[in-house]
Length: 344
Image: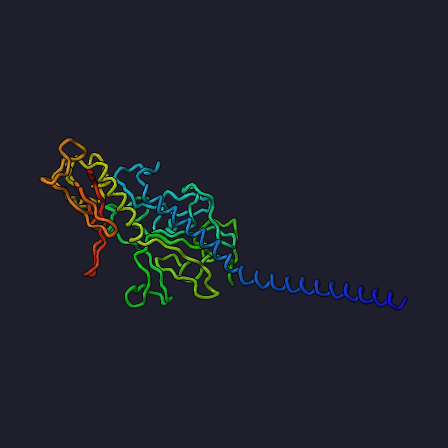
């Protein structure tokens, strides 16, 4: 009887200890999970915002490169490089006109997702992205010529000292477009979803220099500025635009080709209208183009050899070079090369 009671007592004590251990594990796991959530939540929010900004940038780049094929690009003299106006009335559509100088037609507004044929892009706080465009690159009343020498007019003031000094302060200038994730409201902001006038609502979404309707912007540096920015510089954009230009040259090249002639202007009006013929250079090995029985590279009549870093290319009949933007520093280069035609 006593032995039986002792066994039962030990069993009950063991069961109680097991329950206590399980409760301790549950409480510890809950505390650990909360701590992990607290650590990873900001990272997850940043990841959502970063993905939205990156997607917006990618779509804008694609729009600029393929602009001549757009349905609204009725002007055959407009080539690649133009960007849409922002959405100024919160309907997802780019405005038909925009300009930095106008009181209502601004070059800052929301990202025009409908015009770009994508769903509304939002940051981690659920807010639609904003978008700023340099005057020189707007497709409305587009500037011509638009080419590698067309400057971007926007600037990011890295140290928030109310100026744009790339050399002395490390500010980022020559920017074509900026995409902004507004984040959650900060102190003093009162957002009204029904308000559509950008000039009235911008200060409730963007902070500091990002909300003053000029060409200078600041990066997130404190709890008072929680805007996240992604931008497109002229160099970034033109790197791809020049590839498009050179591919068109390769497509239309003929034995009688000379950039800037009326023959080529009739084939590709925007090439000459935007002065690309002044920035693209052709050199050939004296071989007829396109393919013909007389175009073969032989030992007697050799073609070019291009010394690429990875692997030299022989039997090159012609090369097109894009000069790129005018450089202010010596010892640097920004040329792009296109191999027009090769033979085995």
